[in-house]
Length: 79
Image (tube, rainbow, N blue to C red):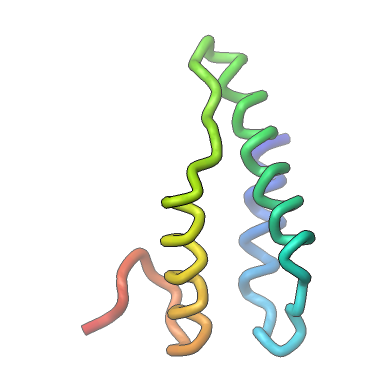
């Protein structure tokens, strides 16, 4: 089930930015759902649950905005 969630989230990122205008509350709901589904998978393997980090959330949001603004999709900005 987790793999399907990641696939659907990835497909959403392939849509044109103009069509994606979720509110911050919708983004927070999606982030929490990803963490919840990840923790379900982690429980299967007896791993400790992940917790949301505000520092990482801010960094990830800034990187996502940078990718959208500069038309790239990568773990780091191209040179």
